[in-house]
Structure formats: structure tokens, C-alpha cells
Length: 480
View 1: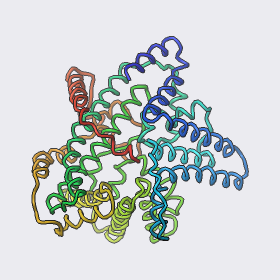
View 2: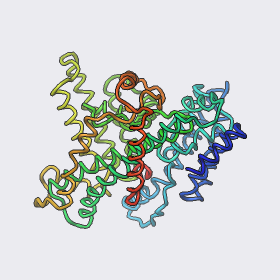
View 3: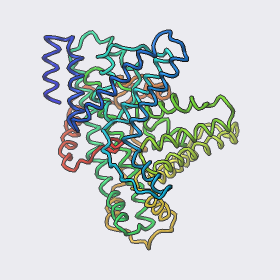
View 4: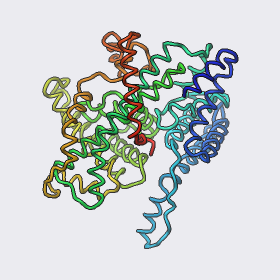
């Protein structure tokens, strides 16, 4: 990264028009650094979708567009299906027809779900006239820009390319670099210090169960709570790092994370968690399934189907489908409750709001078991233990270690401002309709500033986060 900053500084001074090309080359290099052969896959995917979009733009007959769009979307889904779900299909066929096809054990190309979904959204937007086909270099930049290529956020062309076209001076700005590094450092600290430490404890309980030792009730709950904070700070940390890196170069990413454990119902949770994915599923799947245009029963069916497919998107296992189904069921119950209680209660405040927060967190925490478990059998084992049907209570040393500091995670998640609030005055993120007012209020309050105190805090968080890398585990969303 330091080398790229130096190169960018030189190029922006002597050949500023080539800065975009340099960032594209850097993005390709960073992606190929993982597994070089998958650069070919990325290049083919980019070329295919760019060519298909050429036939979707303009005033072509809708019948032709529709078939071409189906081909484009189908090819993208087939690509994900091959790499993510072929072995699941083989297992199903073997079990159904008593066959013995060998599993392929295909290595999943990093980021494939994200850059494929982003291109599916692009094709649909071009076909519907919501966006125009860009120049080839702009298209590659839009898809492959390294801060968001690996694990999102899922960016729409209409949000990103106008920033590229409006960029006249490509030189680095000191304020952008300072803010970007501060946000990046905060994300690094969340990942290496908060997420990975919680993960070590929860992973130990899951691994012990996988080796044949059934968990007790307390161990199962602490494993779920530990994992809930591992994935919380893991994804929050990645979102901060991606937004910080993008802002360092002068680009704003969409808001992707807004204190989801503060949600007082499951509907609000999904407005706060992985916002770009929730938006994608709403715009390109839920609405296409009918949305809320055909009566309440069909709306709930569309919602449940969307969450089931969202669960399947996360992984090729029945446990992910159950996870998506649980969240779909939670959402249906939430909407039914709202429908039944309409007009009887005002906005939840005080103890009612906190009761909602606790109930929502508990539901999310139980569902995370299916997200973390290696298979459906292990997930069910943990849920049964959480309900008091597990092994004789043991309260293992791992659980005792976790319980000594897990209260700090609740304190951070429930009572402290999130990263977007701390950096609100600097407009790091693209405008967000849902949280725009909250961002404006945060911009007037406590937050990051250009001062010696904040500089020291940034240096401290980066240093601690950097030295904690020795225990680094991959970002959880890299596997999707």
C-alpha cells in the first residue's frame, strides 16, 4: 500500500490522467496476489458482462433485451453455481439416487459473489435504462476497485462512476488521506483485536463439539454470543477499512453497517446489517417477486423467498438455508405483529425499546449458530443445548475466559457511536435515505477532528491492530 501511495503521488503529479489506470492496475494486482489464475476468471467475467451490456443499452426491442438479459444473468448465476454449489448438488444427487459421484472440492474464487452480483445489478440497470454503458476502463474500475472487490459493499454504477467523471484533480488530498487512514485504522483494530479475540473463544467451543464433546447450555450460549461479536466486529471492521481506503483516494462508498445490534426489531436489523446486500436483495429480487404490490400474503411469501435465497447466497449448505429461513420467519412475524398492533402503540421507547433490542439480539444470536456451524447437525446440537437439552453443564475454561470480557462487547455495540457517526462531519459515505438525518445530527456532535488527540488515537489503534495481525484470521465474508 505504501508503494502504491508513492507511485500514485508521482503519477498524479506528472501524468494525472493515468491515475485511474494506475488504480485499475493496482486492483488487478491485489486480486491476483491471492490466486493468480483467478485473474483469468475475473477478466472473462468483466469482458462477458461488458459485451452483454452493449446489446442491452439503447432503444432495442424489449423482447430482444429480455432474452439477452436472461442470458447475461443466467451466465452469472451459473458461474456462482459452479464454484459454490456444485458439490452440494452432487451430494443431493448421490443421496437421492444412491450414486457415488466424487466431490469436486472446488476452491472458491475470492470475492466471486460480490463482483458477480454487482454485475448482475449493472446488467439489469442498463436493460431498464437506469444507467448507461460506460467506457471499458471505467467499467473495469467500477467493478474491480480494490477496496470493495473482495467483500463489498455492493456498489451501483450510478453511485460510483459519477464520482470518477467528476474527478478533475487526481492528486491525493491531505484531509482525505488522514481521514481514510483513521477509518482504516479503526477497522483494523476492530478486526484484529475485537473480532479475532472473540473468535478464538467461540471457535474453541465449536471445534470441541466437532470433535465429539457435546456442549452444555452455558457453553452453547457463550459460543453463540462470542460468534455474534466475532462476525459483528469482523464485518464492521472490514466495512470501515473498505470505506477508509476508498476515501483515501477520494471516493465515497455506500454506508454498509449501522450498529445493527441496536435494532429493536428484526426489520430494523436488516436496515442496519450489510446494507448494500439488503438493498440489492430488495431491488433485484424481492421487488421482482412482487414486493408489496399484490397483497399481504404474497408480500410475506416474497419476503420469505428472498431471505431463503439470501441464505443460500452465503453458502452451499442446508445450515445457510435454515439461517435465511429463520430470518425470513422472523421478518414475517415482525410484519404480522406490526399489522395486528397498528395504531395501538406509538414508537417504542424506554423499557419497551430495550425489550425489543434484547429480543432482536437473542433471535439474531440463535440464528448465527446456523451461520457458524459446519453443518446442520452441529447447528441443531447447539440450539438444543441452548434450550437446555445439551450435555451436563461443564462451564469450560474457554467459557470462563469469554465471560470475563464479553460485557465490553455489549457496551461497545449498544452504547458507543459507530464509525459512520464518528466520521459524519467529513462525509465519508454516500448519502443514505434511512440514516441521513442521524448522520446530520452526528455531524454536529462528537466526532473525528484534525487534532493531536485524534492523531495519537489513530496511531495507537493502528499500532495495536497491526501488532495483533500475528493472530489474524481471514475476514469471515471472504468465504462468500
